[in-house]
Image (tube, rainbow, N blue to C red; front, side, top):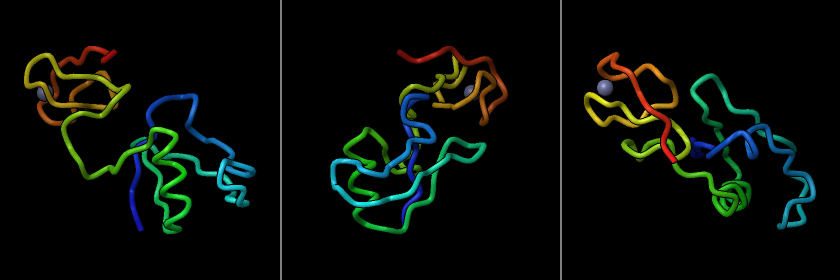
Amino acid sequence: MARLCLPDGAVRGVDMEGARTGAHMGSYTPGRDGTVTVDNPRHIKALRELGAFPANLGGRTGGGFRCVACSFGSFFKKCSRCGGACERES
Ligand SMILES: [Zn+2]
């Protein structure tokens, strides 16, 4: 099982059915923290190819926000570590 972060809105809630594996994968809709929990290794691999990455990496979030004060990577404009303001990462 793995918790994956999906990089942006284009991938969020992606319908994996008919993805490049050809498998019927159902769909994954991220929770409030922008992650999905996947327990099928093939699904994990396919999602990784789409740009998803393990949620436990910490630091860079990709497509999220970066805290101005402490450089923490956040999915939200308000830093989840220090509460400071975050700017969108590009
Ligand atoms: Zn911060």
